[in-house]
Length: 399
Ligand code: LMR
Image (tube, rainbow, N blue to C red; front, side, top):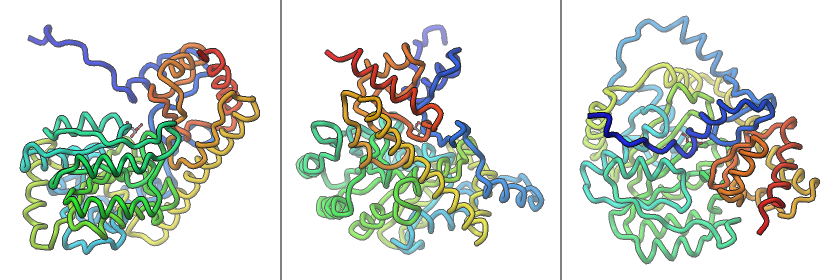
């Protein structure tokens, strides 16, 4: 039977890491997957996480199952963190999920099961996995334009015109709360207000992907888009991830939060989220969520974590700045100053798939084919070679 299976294509992001790991060239640079790295190229375990883990280790009494919806204290604390007072928590049905991907899948599958034929609008471009997750959840995936024609900024009027013209009541609109993946280009506060009002007018429902809280402007500041959406819309789905801001990638820590019109709907919605979880992975893993709960529930650890998030954000911003300056220093034929308006872990460089391929083959520099780079993969030591290589690539591939 299985002999007839065709070979699936490698994942457009994680597949590149496999190729990178096998590349024998020692000078190789990995700017693909969205994983934070420090100036030495390591993905560190946060100190706050280490401290919370040692506390857990000494206090933990059982490895018994969590409830289907997950760790109660974690759910309360992350709901407060993500929603930041935008809605009363008695309207929120929340379930702990394996990472942000798990949150997107549980939320989307619950919708696909109970509201078959629902449409979800995703930005063009968006994180490649959005398309796969939503399609696998039986949602009809539609796209709205996101970028200006030169691809260096938000094409806001095109986005709004498209959703106004083609959006229908009951459609979901996937929005990146902050640090848009893959572009790093976020709506302004005024843009958020227009989006929020449009969704309300057209009775479309925000489906928010919140994977980078703290990596844009700050832990609280990054919630502006979400708060604005919830100010104008009585229902929403929010999918959060604690992979990046707690550095808990492999622990798979996320949550799906459905905001109901009123507290009355909370229990039934939660029961359907639980059904979805039960038929997928039964109940979520404890360790990562328990770690987050310890940190957020302890004033001192929380402060230490906030300082660490600020440090990660500021290192990325510095690397972004130095990359732009570095490209000027090597007399690049293209000006990359537009990257300075982008935020978070990623930047959309405008490099083409052909140029990404050139960089991989000729210089052992790996970026996603869309031209997305993980700015956190840049360090003071690889920056000069990176800038020179991109400058050479632009010349070699001109015409
Ligand atoms: C990314 O976009 O690189 C990250 O969100 C990791 C992933 O799973 O793709």
